[in-house]
Length: 310
Image 1: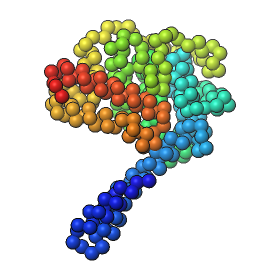
Image 2: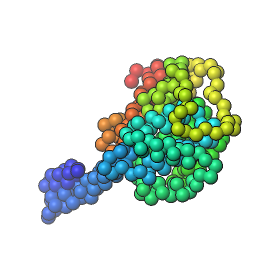
Image 3: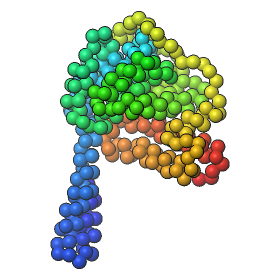
Image 4: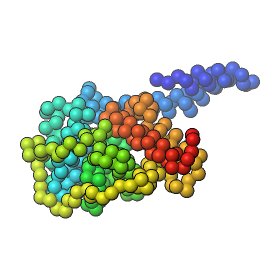
């Protein structure tokens, strides 16, 4: 619980020439500093607890998440081994036991079925989430990642992401922006490493070691309806620089001081200590830590290309 605002308010009040100034400062410090901070910490704790197998574990949220993963993954046609790996990695990060893992697989298969009721599923999740933005952020990070396991989003996958977003009041352009940023991060890493490491360190594993055998995983496959793998085109230095600008959220025409400001803002947003203080689930902290690495590398590339020293 934060007392910083009340303490500082009371101290400042000592120097004000008005009656009961310390009391007034104490109250204002609580209202404008401590109350919002404590509300945020409570919301963050709520988020963390419900995405882990603990006393406050909320099965409807987790099972709903896996159902939506199946729904989005099915947009590419046949379920791919990489998508199964990502779903299984989510289970590990959420510390699901054997029974819960089995239920999560069933939810995934339900989500990709032709008769999946998206409205009913998202309504149940909304009721459990109660508008918690941290949980919603977590959910869409996972959904976008499963759509991008092959470095592209099919039209149907994008449509399905938009459909889910609509249920949570998220505009299509916001979903598209999240896709663009995540893809830029993946391409940026691929440009340096020369191999597929887009999910390493986040929700998904490093797929460069080969494909998983999905035959005995429990996930039901369905016919291929247009899946296309990632292309093998060249990726040059100009491409890396373009991706770097997209990751930072600026353009080659942006003044250097504004580039630096945007970089610092992003690094502060994704700093692990700050995320943990907000109650962000550990799995999402790991994903955002990878984001911070990408942001730092992108900034260094831009700085080098512009000949800047700091």
